[in-house]
Length: 328
Image (cartoon, rainbow, N blue to C red; front, side, top):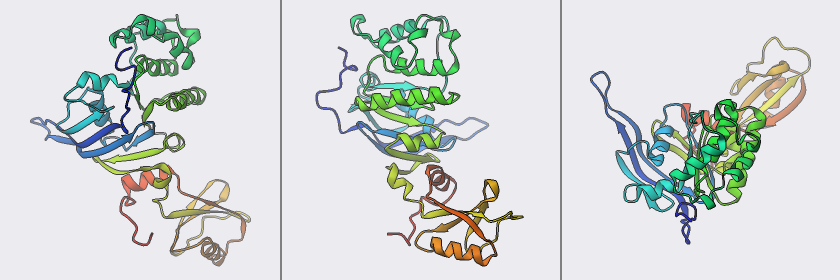
């Protein structure tokens, strides 16, 4: 078997290690040089499902393109499966499968032919190729001999996942893999990704669907302005937010939500409204008392903890990256 197909006998603790990674794009007469990455340090543990999140222009794509060998770094060190991308670039990239954002497929091949050609690029012997197995895994067995041009966008995206796995890489990068994919196909794709991870493949995921990242990833890094502003287990990252919502459904209709001093109030559907308070500074009881003091009769009440979207917005557009001195 090829080196890429079989991980080293002693697998590394970290699938990817990045130290001091910088990338500056050259300027022109009309625009100055642009620094996309400002000294990124990152370790991605072997066997994890790792989320790499950030707003557009934050530096995610540059980082992924450096890993994939599409973009040359300016400074720093990168190791993929304990292989330095400068010293052994081919070995490092052979340990990696990449599913890019853009759908890239030869429309005049069939899916089976596309996988066979891709396997040939990686030097996988014919008797060790798994084209039909991979097509079955991504739900394309019945399309194995159809031309790629006849596939839907979701099918083409699943074919790209299969192409990335033809050489059995120990690390798989999924860059916005469910963009434009319907709910059922998305579910099938994630089922396959979970199976790959259960088999030992390290998954690196970028996505704008934050609920997916929260459900799938055990660790998440948030990139903003070319820097890592957080890198923590998902559960720990969610605890960074010291706010909580109390959702109040009033008895009868209100013209507008009440104004509550010291609390943020936002309308919800069906006449309800949410009151946001800081844990450790206020309590649900204080919120309820404030609502009643405003003359609102409470019909129902519920509480909500922050989700990943709340954390993401606060850390990229707010100040949640700064520790709260009131917290332990």
